[in-house]
Length: 421
Image (cartoon, rainbow, N blue to C red; front, side):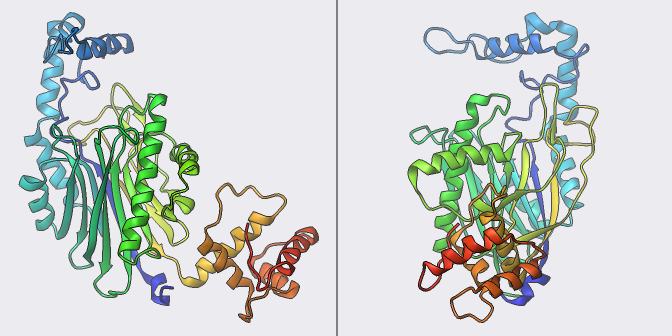
């Protein structure tokens, strides 16, 4: 268990999909900004088909700009698209804007995805701004981007790092990666925190990709459990950030639950207590207007204090002000004290056995043990009716007689008491 000082620890997290230089071109069918009139859905669909068209040998038929777009856009609109590309997509201009944006960040931890130019830009830039960092490239040979985790040098030190790569299925070619870091507070070396960041399979509009992202999400939690156990950090608070390419993280978790039910593999407890930092839309282009970027946190260990409001955009990005096609997220947290965690577990346990329960997620074994300890005030391994009633009064819960009977019958059947929801 953590010390009482845990409750005093506050920190903030900044997450950003920075739009890799490798993919930062307006001359792609999913961008094409600046054309007047704007590209219609029908035009974009046709250009997508032309972009991916192949001959019988698998060779692209219309490789390279403007071969796949010329018959749709025409010279004037193509020139407009090219001008927007030079002004808002070039790495030379965007890199300076990205540096300026990061320089204003006052967060303790940064996570960056779609991050290329790590060796020749990000590593030195973060170092100059007071951050140490680690980076992991995507496994695909043709990709130059990856995931980066950075932390303030005067606050944290790195206690361990690892990664896991995955494809769209168990036997699929590995194309994506999740990076893990175990950070230790310099002023309290016994206190650690796990930070992970990832970028899941693309095309959030394609519902057929939901299972692929669910598989990738499950892979992350399995590896997270291995990583935390390896570093004796299973009780460390955990943060997961990323471009998850889905509009509903709870839907993603539902797919993950279904997949894990078949494998019975141990997973990190974050999966059962995960909450997401609320935000509006995080990416706005001519092709989409979605929320797909997330900061997820372990609600059993952490309490969300504040979030930085995002602008409500009425125009596409990237643009002069915003150097990526995504908006950054920022949130601050505090670690819960041991008593807060016991009280919360007790409250959820009572909800779990309630006949009116709407609790959707199971309690972990650790949470059940904390709940039992909350009611077992004298530590004798038993919960009496008086213990239960006093505990519920402290929680402000009016428990029904029938529910009391259910709990007491459970207690009477076990020597010593072992409660399972």
